[in-house]
Image (cartoon, rainbow, N blue to C red; front, side, top):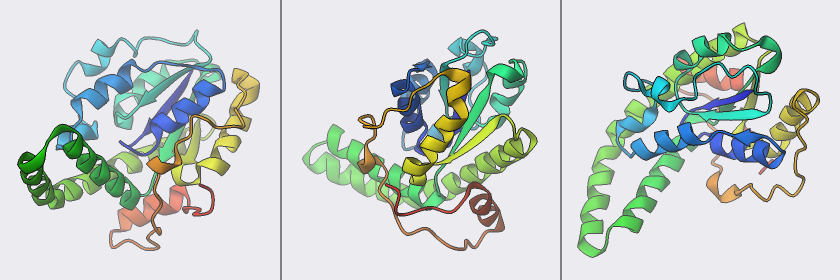
Length: 233
């Protein structure tokens, strides 16, 4: 089994699509459930799901017998780490998908505007856009806090489970994905598709990466998960 963990709009679905194209079976129920309840409000962060969400999903039972099954997941590390420990070491891998904070913020902002245009018309759209703009400072502040919480936990997990954890920077997808596949091919018999027809580069509009953040936690996260390679998408 392969669990794909990553922050919301960090590229989890992109990696899942790549593994599915390579011959794995993707369990999408959890991803669908989470996306349905996540809006532009803070509920989308997935770090503190309501009690019973994981059990109700039906995906957190012992899956040791499944080898090429992929679980895309936005939940925080603390909600799947304990369950993962029960799986056979031989059969489990975790792909941690990382995307720099500024690109996540940009993606969520664009997605929020896109939904407003898709769901509202004329004057209602104008008011919706105005309200969305007013909510952005609080949204971005809380998003940053959640981002730090998520990736510091992911960093700790990766350091403690070096043989299990694989790191993929979504901004370097074209170079990182083949490396991930090299690590998975012998154990899971997957075949990365060269045409990458599932890859939609417009979802990952690149911005110039920030070299140094004002917060030490963000610098720690960025240095651990690797610099963005702007030439790979």
